[in-house]
Image: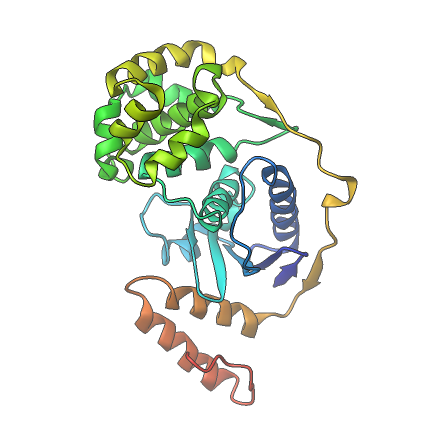
Length: 292
């Protein structure tokens, strides 16, 4: 089925209740993020969410076996693809944060891209910065990778042996840089420096500190950083939009899936197969894209 609000279009096989809850939660997140993350991209591309109703459905498209969602920019519309049962968790918010940062024109190293997405995925009750228990547990249980490795080897964010620690460390570092008074005031300067410099060099330029010095602060921050919570402005009362529901959206849903795959590296042939099948199943439809 297809559900739409003013800013989102959602296709799902997970049912109306799941879809309605997901699309409204993204509308609220969008409102909350507006004053936090500058959005410099004025293009009004549609945000299209594809939320599968089962893990098996999603796994066919997942970039990694443990993935529960991903963001994929496109020419006509941007996509967030989700394991439906995970849609109401932080996964949807994490992927939407990636979309917002992408549209904002940010070019970020992998650790900061994921760290900020984790930080912004945990906005609730008008607050940003509440500690994420699973990330804190990972840092206590799994140990530290170390900042020198984290900022220089993006593969630690995908390797099964390091991914949990890498995400936890990236989240905590983003939390400290954005919310701790010692670092927060210079964070915009760090974003600017990272456009032309590596992380170690940018830390030196902006904070006058080495990676080792930042790491010492970070390890101490794990014990005290939970106090750094930012109170956000309350969303306006009309922020929750009306949801329109179309219960028979097979053609449009499969068309969205084909378009998503057309933007997915290495999946172009699958996209063409889906378009061919739609041609066969809906021979009288005239609204196929010309460049399918």
